[in-house]
Amino acid sequence: MEIWIEKYRPGKLSDIYGQDEVVSRLESFVKEKQLPHLIFAGPAGVGKTSAAIALTRELLGENWKDSFLELNASDERGIDIIRENVKEFARIKPFNDLGLRIIFLDEADQLTSDAQAALRRTMERFSATTRFIFSCNYSTQIIPPIQSRAVVMRFHQLSDDDLKSYLKFVISKENMTLDEDALDAICEVSSGDARKATSILQTLKYSGEKSPKAIFEMSGNLEPADFEKIIKLAMEGLFDEAVDLIEKLTVDRGYSAIDLIKGMHSFIRKQRIGQKQKLAIIEALAEAEFKLVEGGSDRVQLDALMAKLSWIGQELN
Ligand SMILES: Nc1ncnc2c1ncn2[C@@H]1O[C@H](COP(=O)(O)OP(=O)(O)OP(=O)(O)O)[C@@H](O)[C@H]1O
Ligand SMILES: [Mg+2]
Image (cartoon, rainbow, N blue to C red):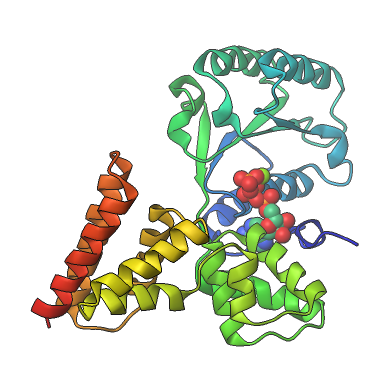
């Protein structure tokens, strides 16, 4: 069985969804036949590795594989191995018109500053014929001397619209049918991560399940209906019932207070309710989240949140 995240890896830059600005800048490098060092910054599963491969293929032509090296910085064997690999690779003559090799270093932000500094020296040494593409979540975690030698490309989470277009493309290739509800559920649980969305879609195909409920379950996410219930109970002043439900979700099903708060937040953002109430609820959620991150206790903060929602439900209309 072929894994869909490989089967549907965008082959060309123009096949990448939702990263228009990055794609058009990369395409201009291809057109001009030149390449600076690059930093690809962005969250998981949005096309960084795919873009590096597509770029290399378009820039270097048919023998691109001989001139492309992918390394993972979080490999526990560390920076020495990376430098060895780079040196070894730099010995091979690049067989392409540009005379270039491209090294893609995944999870570059996992390297310590010292390791990055060592890498920078290696980078300088081979800079005549070798370009580096560093992949990371945040470009700020790359040391300034590397940042200043590279062009930063920012990748974003796919918007629901872009993610849906991509999913619909895969769905049509696979002769599947899926309701709009199910597509919405996939978007909701994958938060712009196209890899996650693709895996869910493949699981759906092989399990025969298609309901939003199944999608929430297989992703380990709670359903919007759960959050709706908590908020409703609290706002109607049914504090004990709300707390009981929370107890069930946290103690019996293992969700953390932060999971619940994030879920309530994403639920309430989409609701068309009175503006005053909506803003007050969002503020209450933000306060609870902040206090939890600062070390507040789950139970106390969730109780306080329920109390606040109850007040909002009674006092604001
Ligand atoms: N922008 C996108 N357009 C189309 N498919 C995508 C996109 N981003 C990710 N995918 C899908 O997810 C798979 C994995 O994407 P990719 O490896 O490029 O993500 P990444 O950004 O490198 O993630 P990570 O940071 O976790 O390495 C692709 O093979 C493809 O199926
Ligand atoms: Mg990657």
